[in-house]
Image 1 (cartoon, rainbow, N blue to C red):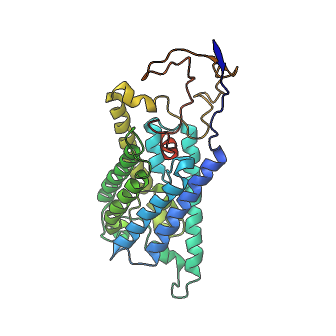
Image 2 (image 1 turned 135 degrees about the horizontal axis):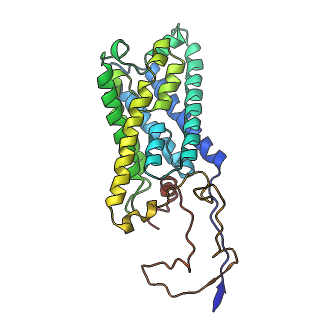
Image 3 (image 1 turned 135 degrees about the vertical axis):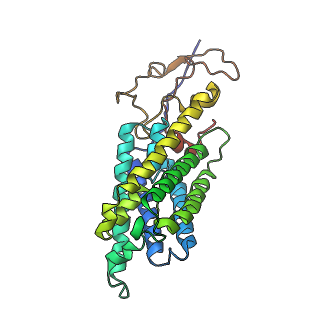
Length: 313
């Protein structure tokens, strides 16, 4: 006995849409972080800047997370890559979009600063919020201390993101607040030590419009946070391996978060079960789905699916 089943796969956001969401979200975060930092006093009162940046991250994830997964930060992208939740090609695209969006956001603030008469030197204004160490840090924190805090902060942010967007009991509406609040409390510490952003794309955008010393020390604000992201991604991947198969099945096969209809070799997936619009009816136990009765859906980006409300369904 057969029954006709029309295959109606749900349309997924395309490459341009996802990269645009990453660029737009990154731009928004940088506009808020740099703008509030320049027009306030982050050294004496870091809370307004830290809170504003954390709220910007939350808002961006709520607005664009369903499209791209809501990374807006190279450390989160790297953490997802190492955890097996996004492919290398997609991660490179996200990285480029995040840098472009961040630089555009910093450029917009640079233009605004240049129109303020009391700010005679726009680059000097950007120096106030540029990350640094030693003589260029508010607390004159030395390189070793900045490196340690950047590694630790990035690892914690990635851990919160991966944990908040994984698991069947997670609540989609709460994940952006978890990530945003984590960013806010860590920035409270980072601002005092030396404007530590825990975001290489934001550090690059700020250094681009600051004095030459910011660009010379930029390497630290790439190496250290990416180290922390790698550690968190490896730890998360290890936790998956220690979990029961039922708890890890959502993460098997990883995904690029760009085109879920392509396999690991970037070749179109031929679904022989759905191709003919007719499938055989088979007895299915309540808790066990038959792989022949229900074709396996292509692996999706876990974070984006989380915001779509698909986790646990």
